[in-house]
Image (cartoon, rainbow, N blue to C red; front, side, top):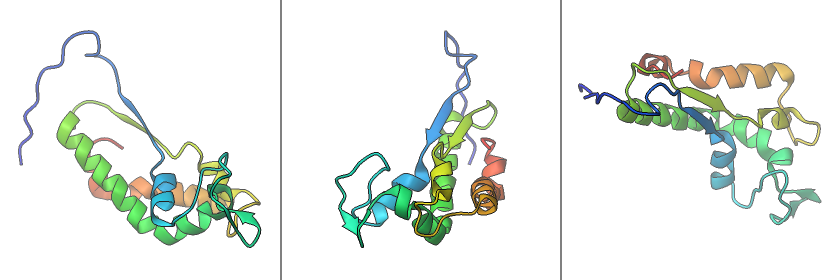
Amino acid sequence: MPIAFVAITGVLSKQVPVIVAYVSAFYVKRHHGNLCDCNVNRCGQTNGVPNDLCNFGAQYIKQDLAAITNVYKLYAQGYAGCYGTTRPIVFEMEPDWYQYSGNTQSTPLTKQEAGSKATALPARRPAMMRIGIW
């Protein structure tokens, strides 16, 4: 389907948008019940451990990586449809990714896993690269 482009002029015409995406964190919190960010303590406990991303995030990300990747694909398609594919756009993916390799995780990502899974998010979908935003 062809995409119509509108010339962008004005003060924002030469700016590059930056999208900060916490898709993994939002996905696992939405799909795994009572799970909070690491700095929130109102989600209860499991076996005496706080129900948060610093304890259970890596476990659920490993389990749900294919679904999380699909969410990124939808993001890519949405931005490409709205913004086009001829101008640059930056995705800052998972700024808190480091927390999933911490020693508080029930099944922490190793440093190698953290790197390969973070790289895999866009790399798993070559079509996303054709969209032009990776």
